[in-house]
Amino acid sequence: MYCHLKTVKKWIMVAYLTMLSMSLYAYARGEPSEDQVKAAFVFNFAKFVEWPESALSSANVLNLCVTSQDKMTNALKLLNQREAQGHVLRVIDIEAPEKLEDYACHMLFITDSEQKRQHQWLAKVQNQAVLTIADNLAFIKQGGMISLYTEDSRVQFVVNQSVTQGTGLKISARMLQLARVPRE
Image 1 (cartoon, rainbow, N blue to C red):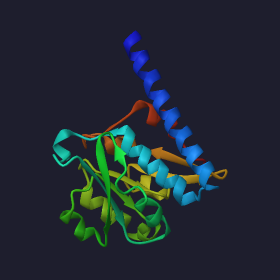
Image 2: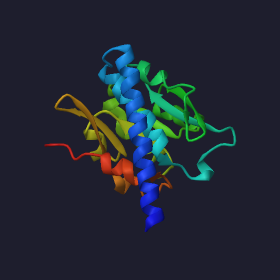
Image 3: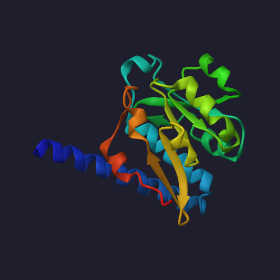
């Protein structure tokens, strides 16, 4: 019990320090845009999700695949070459769901411009160890794993745990505690 409590306290401290460092960084650069805040969330997801060893390459690379080009894409590209859990994050643009098979995606961010085709994107990675993320609430209802949304001028996220089960992905308990239930 004591060891478990110590581990939980450690994760809380890591999360607090990460958020504090992001806040100080944002303060130094001025007010961050909503897209920059969402990109910071995506980066933290990379830190608090564990992939099965079979899904990770020996190159220590974590591929963040991004669909299409829109305003969110530029914010996500700033994450390229950042480190998460000992892996270098590589941001990859993907044009169409059919092209997904050409890449070993660990995370898939479906941009707003692809909202009409998000079910096609999800079908390509169904039951795979690919963390799927979008910034619309309809995503969760269609079988996505994490939806980012804005409520009361704050970026929040919701997790669909039933979809993550069976993929081999393990989401930290702390991250699940920070997830919200959006107002209808």
